[in-house]
Amino acid sequence: MDLLDFFLRSREAQHALQQARARLYRLAYSWCHSAALADDLVQETLTKALRKSAQLRDPKARDAWLFTILANCYRDHFRKLREMDDVDEIEISHETTPETESSSAEIVSLVRAAIAHLPGAQRQVVTLVDLEGFSYVEVSQILDVPIGTVMSRLCRARNTMRTMLLPDMQQLPALSPTIRRVK
Amino acid sequence: MNKAQRYSDEHLNAFVDNQLAAEEKSQTYIDIGHDEGLNHQVCELRKLHDLVQLAYREPPAPPTHATPGAPTRRAGLRFGVAASVLFTLGILLGGLIRLPGPATAPRATSAPSPAQHRVVAAAIHKEITLTQASQRTEGAVARAPEQAPATAAANPPSALTLPAAANAVGSGPVVAQSKSPGKTQTKVLIHLARDDDAQLSQALDDIEGLLKYYRESRQTARVEVVVNGGGLKLVRTDTSAFAGRIQRLQREYDNLTFAACQNTIDRLAREQGISVRLLPGVITIDSGMAEIMRRQHQGWTYLQV
Image (tube, rainbow over all chains, first blue to last red; front, side, top):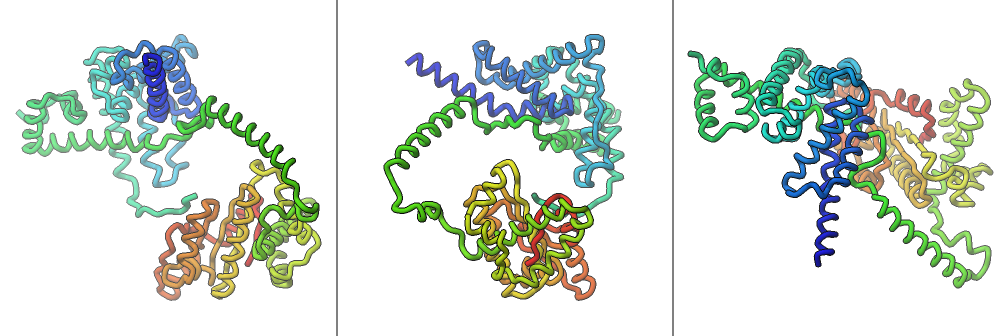
């Protein structure tokens, strides 16, 4: 019976990891804005999670645990890449410009550009809170920083985004939604 | 003291993110109700929260094909074992069941209908023509689309008796043999520009026959039907006599697209005051002729019905 329980738990854990993959990828992409790197990070995260699945005592804490691994993988990646750069200070470039996007995608492009402009540490906090809905306590555990730091980073990130985004968005033309191509 | 000044940015962020205790949250709600500036600040924070969610709702697909629904290695192994068993069984059964004569053996599979014969023959003939033309000069390629309607007019579809086409149809899945299925994608563009119901009905028969043929011969194919001029009648909600049939075709074949010319729609509005409404699932393209040229440059086979 114990053996059966073990297999059932193992299958359940694998299923949960598969379910989390899309969310991990979305968050990783919001951090690095590179599909290839985000995929690599998620792959590494899931590999580590599977290897260390015995460490997870409480299945309810699985989400926070997975995103902690992702945050560590992200930090390690930049450590390996450029030992002299502080990951918190790295700004990523946004490869597309509003001109290259269609008008319907312009808002998405603007917001991604604003997120890309944020320092890495602020970017992580704002995406963990806004995309994944983690509480401040959980974010402080995932990133291993004090809760006050989480709050101040979030505050600075949103102030920057407000300055960058909201005036730009008022200048966008109001277009009626149209479907040009569906396939 | 202004209430907006009493609340720090951190406090307002915590309010928006639902991180405050119940009592603090209630008090903040009350104060927001009395202070326009505070209300505005909270609205902006909520807007930013929504914008971040919107921006990453559909991140670009990862370069690898690893998706949550992708088969795992174990599933692949299972599939391999099942395939091997089926393959062995197939060989055994094939040895046991002998067909009466060699002449009937190639006909064991379902034979294409006459409509399939016609359109597939035309498509194959057109591909051959385009290939030969491209081997000659670029000028010849440019002339190919102009020649196509003339050929079609001179030889009605049912009267296609070209040796190459006849051979191709006679031997059934010759296209699948000449092009490895799954790797190359057959792309056919069908152009409808006349409003004759009998002709449109015939065209739909041909399109369905073509799609059925590709499905049965397991070829990956895309078929795009471009309507302009009088052909727009086919996809207008107020004039189409085949709305149900078109919707059924779209449901059954996800590789079929109906594309309506925006220029024609605009012209109808301008000259006749008709506000065109298209059938569900029909897309619009800027110009039918431009689409035809674009598709031909991309290697699509052009057929005018």
